[in-house]
Length: 503
Image (cartoon, rainbow, N blue to C red; front, side, top):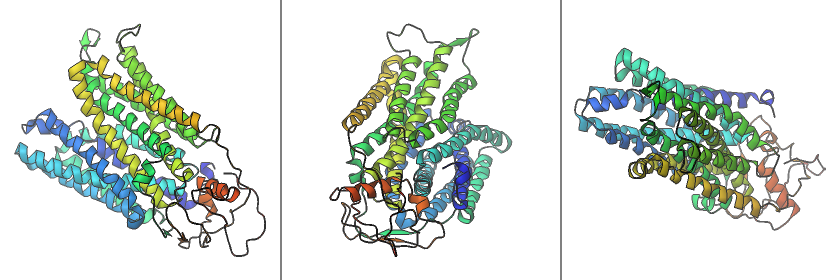
């Protein structure tokens, strides 16, 4: 399905998330040029505001699974509105910190506001990822990569805008302007984003424990964590690693170090559409996992070159640093997009119900493990750098990528010969106003009944070709297989054979 085949509601969903993620990324990244300077001017040390940023990641790690597990109760649109609106209000309050002269009070309120900001950001990210997975079940990776692309652009633009506003109006103005922009974005979501159909499933919904007990999901989440850790590691250690490098007899400036990070960010953004298309392709049954393997190889290779690792036949140079950052950017894109797509598709393959409960749960876990990686990367990276130097500390990241490769390749080998059951029954004419009764007991409860609110769009637009259809087909062809366990799909007047459904 090309972009031209999207429905009006799908177009509105795409436009909404592109605009709001761009604004959100600007707000997240705009503090980099001036917040540390303001904190130091109030008598704080570097590790103080390092803890403030670390508190953000830990809060996201703890809160995201809770939000994801209850997203159907809260409602996707409400979760998005409250999340992005709360971040906007908190940013405006952040601007008031510039009026505080006491360093201790500045630090205390920074901690409090940063943690509340993390809760709002977690709600927004989990809600947006869940909505994308719900609205585009056959193009999860492609749409996720599109959103990430604009998020990345926002992160590049944010520090420039933030620095300019700081020069014009001091500490308060950037937060006031960007906070107001985000709050306006929540209003934009309220009026523009379509309401998804309400789906209620009686019985036990999937839990975090059930998701993490599935090897395919756990491996995908582990790969996301290692990718986030590699990025955090570089953010902490790259600048001191380059302190002895010279260009024309002069050490690198902060601007030049930032430009090297742009080599990583640029290749990350450029590669996202490629990885999204490969993950959504039907070249293999496990396309996302192959993409993750490539990502792990590229990240590990990038770090080997960045060191360079002991035994490499070349020395650290500007060329080797640019090459290493480029490899890391490509690998980061493959790991993030592959892990997101893999986790969602693996959940449906494993028999989880194809509902917003599952999408919210997996999106919450994805956001959580990414935040955890973003926390342990700079934390352990800084400790290992001080104790061992960069050339030895990089073994921490390389070792995790090797473990990821072994887990991914082992899973692919173990599941290589699993049969793929063809789908030979059409469900393309079922509308969303119909009930789908007679679903036999699954591992999540008995007597499951799906009730969908009336909506003009055909149900087939969401389910056609999705992994739910594959799961239904497997159960129809092989009675007794655990999973969704659908033995029949009744519909008013449905007795004729339809066209085969290609899953």
